[in-house]
Each structure stands twice: as C-alpha cells, then as structure tokens.
Image (cartoon, rainbow, N blue to C red; front, side, top):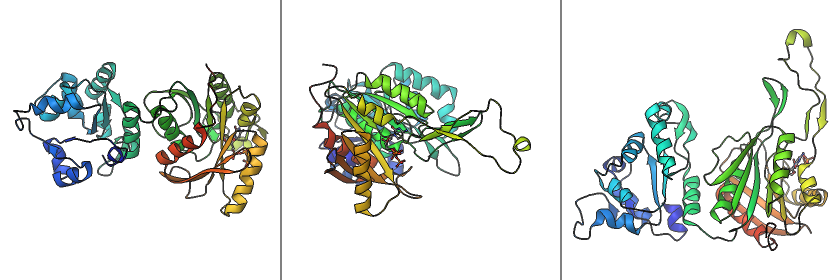
Length: 383
Ligand code: CTP
C-alpha cells in the first residue's frame, strides 16, 4: 500500500473480515490514506459493490489465501471483495500466502492453473519461513516485489517501451561430478529486481537466470542456465536483439577442466583432492567487443574492498578492461550484498565518472541503475 501511494496512486482498501483480524482498520486507513471498505450492504445507493471494481486500474490481493483462490476460481461474490473483482475488468494480481501443503494441494494447484489461464497474474509465493516452525514455498512475496509487479501492470514510467532488455542474474555453478558443483553466494535478487523494473518501464525482458533462489517476475521470459558456458551461449543469443544488456550474474571465472561422470569417492582420492580449473570466457568483455550499434552494455563488479577510493579505482580499471558502457560497483562480504534485501551501488560510465549512486532496497537500486543508463540508449537496436 505504502509503495503504491508513494508512487502517486490512489489506493482503496477492500478488507475482508479475516483481513481485519490481522490488521486493524485504522492502520489500513492511515497507510492507504482512504476510508476502508468492508461491507457489501454499505453504500448501496452509490452501488459501491460494483463502483470500486469499475473504477480500479488494478486489483491486488495480498495475501491471497487458499480459500480466496478457491472462491475466485468458482466466481463467488458473497462479500465485497468478490463483488469488486467480478465487477472489474482491471488486471488482477494475486500474492498467495499459505502453508506449503495448502499451496501444493491438488485443489489449489488446479485453481491456480485455471486462474492463470484466465489471465490472472501472480507474484510469488516465495519460499521461506511460514507461520509456526515450518518453512517452504507459500510465504507471501516481499512487499517491494508485490509493489513492483503491481507497478509493472499499471505501466509506470514507460521509458523502456519497445526496447528489449536482457538481464543475467544469479550465480553460475560449475559441476565437479553429478552431485557437486563450485558455486557462489549470489541469490539473484538484484538481477531479478532489475528485470522487474525494466518490465515495469515497458521493456520486453529476457531474464537469463543462473540458479535463481528467488522467483522470476511475471511478464518476463526466463531462460534458466546452470554454468558459465550455458550463460554465455544464452546471453549471446539474446543480445542479438537487445537494446540493453545488464550482466548482473555472478559468473564463475574458472570451471573444473573435467567433470567426473560418477560421484568422486574418498576411497579413490585419499587425504587430498586436487582440482584443476580452467578459465571461463569473459562474457561481458566479449559482449562489449561485439556490441551492436546503439546497444548499451552494463556490467557489475562485486568487490570486497571497503575503502571508497580504492573501490572506485578497482571499478575504473574494471570498466576499462571489460569495455562495457557502465559498471555498477558494490561492496560484498560475509554479510553484505548477497541474499540481502538492500544494496548500495555506485554507477560508473566509460570515462570512470560517477553517474549514479544509491542505497536502498534492491527494487529502488534497480530503478536508479536504469535511470542512469537509459539515457545512453540509441535509436533502437531492433528498429
Ligand atoms: N563476468 C563475465 N564473465 C566472467 C566473469 C565475470 O561476464 N567470466 C561479468 C560479471 O557478470 C560482471 C562483471 O563481469 O558483470 C564483473 O565480474 P567480476 O567477477 O567482478 O569481474 P572479474 O572479471 O571476474 O574480475 P575479478 O578478478 O575481480 O573477479
């Protein structure tokens, strides 16, 4: 609610009885800055049960329970929320939240498939801590993600309309044998936030996801990959029609030179195991060298350097070496950068100047990175 209000939208809350057991009406009214609607038989003269739905540009149900999904699938309208939705032609975005067993129950699975086939949009659920001790898929997506998906559906700033944006996200895994790999701690959150932000600004987005630990956003074409070589081939294909390529993925610099076809055993290895690694291609450098006219290439540099001047020096040397148009620099460490919800970045251009600097949620960082790079887009690669 707060994110949508801050983005300048008028938010009307339709609360079910169950919703009011969790969050009080004054809170909902304070945050939405509007009266809360609850009763079907309230405001009958102004036909409120259809008026709210007819006036809406978008309806978001968060959290959407298993019971709500079932009622919606059946087209039930026994409360104000059901009436509002049935009386509306606006896009509908649902953020499911329930226990894993309920999410995976055949009835829910079938309801979700039916709703999707009717054009209903979903964000999440994420996987994580649920109420009580259990954990798994069913946790409601973070508010930032729901807001970003909502803004994408109502079409926020459309400065990427007609553009094809390719984002790589996550961390590659280099297999050692059928059960083991060498990987890194990238969760994919920042890259997924970038894909969402680009889609919200009207772009057609291809997300090359390397072992993503977060759900891919709606309205984005996802190409799943595991290794650096797979990522290289997927991004090279997608870049052929891309206006903007953002290499947010953490790519392994080296891979084992041979992958064992069977599990490596202690008995055959003894007390030491020596791995021989060979260099992976530098994908960002290759994309930059093969850049199409008008195409913009953005690299990332995750560094453990904490001194700002030395960090900027590393960034300037890296953008020079990679040949990309912009470099997004951030500090990572045991507790910073990876799998967290916030981020702090500096954006450098080719001449090493700082063209953007933000600290905030990964969603707001994504938007500000796009603000910094969007002005460099040429007439259009596909034009
Ligand atoms: N990258 C790439 N191909 C690789 C390694 C990295 O395309 N084989 C990309 C990443 O996606 C990122 C940028 O290059 O956008 C910088 O990654 P980083 O790991 O910081 O740089 P490296 O070149 O690997 O340098 P370092 O020696 O600091 O690890």
